[in-house]
Length: 488
Ligand SMILES: [Zn+2]
Image 1 (tube, rainbow, N blue to C red):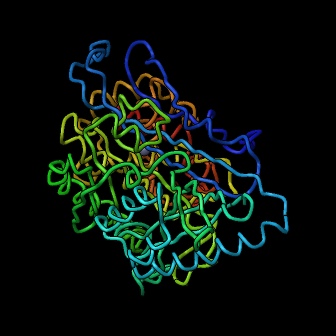
Image 2 (cartoon, helix red, strand yellow):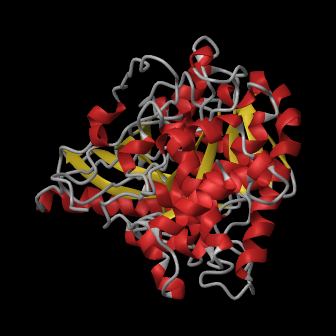
Image 3 (cartoon, rainbow, N blue to C red):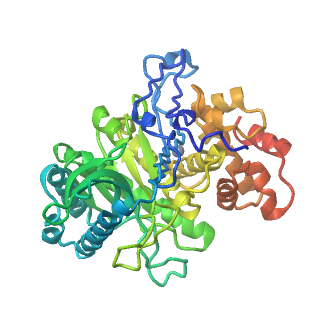
């Protein structure tokens, strides 16, 4: 793979792929991508690992050789960067910059102690509403600490600064492991931050007077949330949809426990997450807002979104927060498509949680613009969600669904699907095909997770990556024989 001419131009990242029989669905692209990618600089880079699961369109399902129409699941990754110019150094910026850094130091103190009064002593005007919502939502989600800082700023006459700031909080379930687990970073706080366009005035002591999400809003920026906590998950919904919480908590907890336990059983290590934070909605409009507005969400069931850690610990009083240029955790948004039928949501949770674990295991780096090899992430997540739904083993023989059998028979040619295969109209089929690779590798005595993670890390073909683990014995021909014997 070669570097794209621009780092991860969003227009090159397919926002979704829907396995819809018949004519291709019209694709719509939102405006969020327009913000991105054209300004070259250094400051803010966001990765969105988007995982999209879709149901069949009932109207067109009859075009395919089976009659029921709910089994489609598909997924894909999209990534978005946006960057900011670094202003020329100027003496006139010195004082305001020092002042905004001093403000951040104070605000970080407030976040660390979750001292609302102290924090809002520096918030006025149009910033009060959005930051109050943020704070209330973090209380609902059960946050333990937070971080705020400045990616970039531009002074206007010394009394006002327009800044791109970051803000984020550690939630009870996310990336990380308990102290004493022996894993690097154990016991430290790893959480993602979001960028905001802020205006800070210095007329009467530093005050944040404007606070708007920079680009896509997170669920906690766009809705007043209610959250419930299970053993391994926090599930949140907008206040007017809190009836959905009881309905989904048990499913999410069950899927979460399985993916974490399975990770520990297969690796001998504790999972690199303490659990999962998910946002659920039956509203297509709300779901579209949560997922960036970049995609048509008509057939989307769920997404897992990874975001970066705070860029630095400067002006932050808490030394245990992990900073730096890697993703610091994922959060999940589960939309109306996950509930058709309702039980389908459990599989979507298992799929998205698998992504969150893999992303914690092999975090994306800001310095790496290649993007994920989809066979390494979607094939692996599909392999896991199929195992979960089949009692822990990958379905073969009579356990293989008609859809899967049909797809694999039609499209499998012994090659690992290329990334664009995961984006087209028949994407569902290529997820199924990619999942068989891990089932085959497991049967051949390989560690399928190690292969998937190596392929994610190296942006490589998992079939080639498997050679790193045992040296020999796998091939296109052997994989083809395995599929013919076990699936078709
Ligand atoms: Zn996926």
